Amino acid sequence: MSWRMFSLCFIAASMLTTTAFPRSFLSQYKGLPYHDSRYQGGPQKIPGKVLCAYYDLGGEGVAYHDTDPKNQGSGELNPADGTYLNEFRIHEGVDTSYTKFQRKPDPIDDNPFDAIVPPADLPYVGWTEPGEWFNITVDVTHPGTYAADFLYTSNRGGTIALDVNGKDATGPLEITTTNDPADPLAWRQWHHWNLAPQLFRVHLNNGKNVLTVHILTNGNMNLAYFDFKPVHE
Image (tube, rainbow, N blue to C red; front, side, top):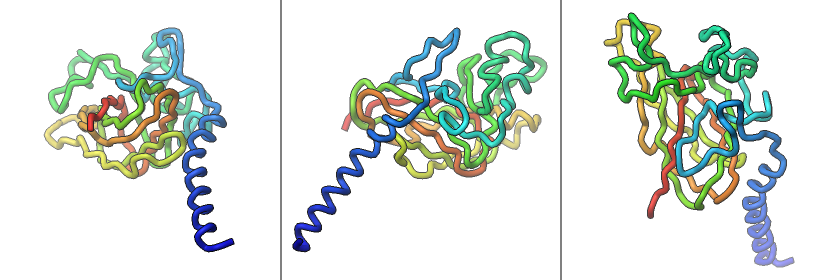
């Protein structure tokens, strides 16, 4: 075989591997879109807001990886009392809570140190640690490039990353700290909400895609949602 023919075969094989990889991931993935009595389920829609707390069903090692099996929010910080939000995904390892408004004497998520006031009763993923990840199945209406705004808090700053169908799509993304030394309440440093506009851009194929959110460094973040909007180039 000539060197030219070998090179052409190698390039063709590389292209086949690159294009086949996402298909292989999707065909082997065992997770399912989240659903419960209030959220009827199905893949979350893009364009639109993709909520982190609606990560997939499937459990540890399939839909997510968490450093411990206990939900530090539901049933712990938020006592199990029969309410939907306090017991949201209570038996899963990913730690979840929700934005709390009009709490006296000290406001929690509607506090004066917010850069942006989040929606009330919004479920989110918190207590994050490096090495943790979770999957979200989405349905993309139109193929193309999307930019994503990110609603979050971050006591220390840090980095996250996003995979699409098992393949890195963003590299490390720097998350700016929301710590504000002017806040007299130390515990509220975890509740200073901010919106990172166009945190990343990513190309998405139409139809089903699986997004994997990775916590890379520092942790101590609350992840609410990514708001995907088409980029008109």
